[in-house]
Image (cartoon, rainbow, N blue to C red):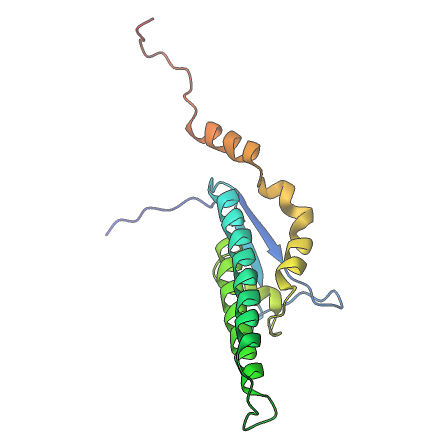
Length: 166
């Protein structure tokens, strides 16, 4: 069998993680944990946009669920929480799942978990992640102009010695 050697991908931005003490976070095999962005992916700005929109939709859905739950008759639960409080916990858990799916659209599969570093999801996690990534957004080129330029550069026709009908 013959093999084709693939070239190393050039336009990849890798961002590693450090804990609160500045220590590099590593997995169980002592490899650095990081997320990576393919800067050649012309859909990267669209992924970011879908991520933001889905997070906003998840927040609206949760607020709507809370309003519906608050309108229901509340009953004392078998445990510490009432039936409505239990429903709110379930709705919040679903909200966190929806947020993770949305964020992984942009961060890559498992990217949200890498950011959380073993911690539980929380309401402001996207805001925190977005703030942490802000200094890198220029490199990611997430604006419409950047996306247009990227498409033009990817598909531009270079001049050659081919005959034309001019």
